[in-house]
Length: 194
Length: 194
DNA sequence: ATTATTTTTGAATCAATATTCATTAAAGAT
DNA sequence: ATCTTTAATGAATATTGATTCAAAAATAAT
Image (cartoon, rainbow over all chains, first blue to last red):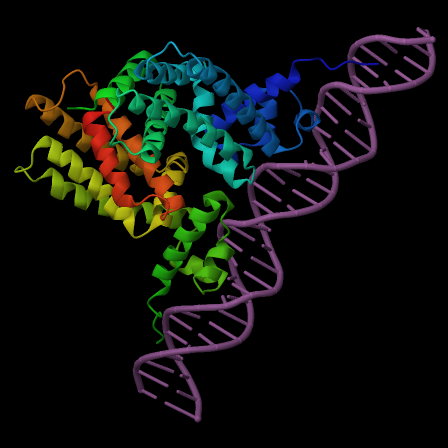
């Protein structure tokens, strides 16, 4: 019997990330993705159930990667809370640093994906914010962070700022270096502007 | 001759804001908007050229409002830089405070609208960030803000954090009060978490 | 009350593209 | 070398929903 060539599934995902980033999910055509992946339109449906499924696949893989790396930082009990915050910020930028298109998709399609009714993505993301919140809580308990910061607001504040900067960086990766961005973010987060 | 009833244009926009917020621009149907506005589908096209045009209209009106209010703060030379930052944050939350759906549309469709090729929206938003940057620069010059903050990163940092919190608030306005959010944002922005 | 003018309507049209599937091609087994 | 099985193809199909437009309704003028 004949075997699959073995690289098409990955080719399609990689093409899809680029096409979704360029046109946005709703304006991305399956035929464009197929062309970019050097496969026939129909082949896309051999590997993925439908268009949504491609997007879900991208997000599932990405979140898995994020959690894996987040846990390494989070579980390291030798780190001080402020060091944890810094490493978490670094980690997020690192995950995307080799793939600006993925960053664009992550930022732009987050809402779409939740609207499509797949609630696991909401959970991923709540769980991710829980980690951030836990670090803040730990820092407050240890007296390193100020206790008047509202936890609920903090978790969204940090995520929102990072998300947006990721997007700014990804739209033109040469404009501001990712290192410059992450160091400024860490600085602003810990000390503010004053 | 017959006169227009006079309220349909506005009814349609208001319905569209709600429908876009609920389903997202691409999944929003003209027929749903028409139904919510109590007009016929065809009537939508009497007042607006097409679907895009409705979205553009929403954003044009919104940006105009934002700039008008931003300028009042920005032009007030009696204010200290940190007071300006605080008032700008307050201002943004105030603009949306009566209309969570508008906040959702603003945050979610920002990218769409730029992709649709109407570059004025990019300009609006760059201009808005220029204001933020100018205040930081002024603060640094006056020795109130730390000079090691990168201006380019700062402008996106603040915008990203606010944008996202706006969205969090708008998805469930009762969960965290908008006052609580804006005061925490101001605090974090000026002083950080440490 | 009739006419002229403009608004409003919503069913019909039209276009776009996601998805299917009959066909063809390739790989491995015998 | 032929056969069997599965992969790959892309043109045809189906669906969805934006947009149009001919007809109907409303208002104001005479």
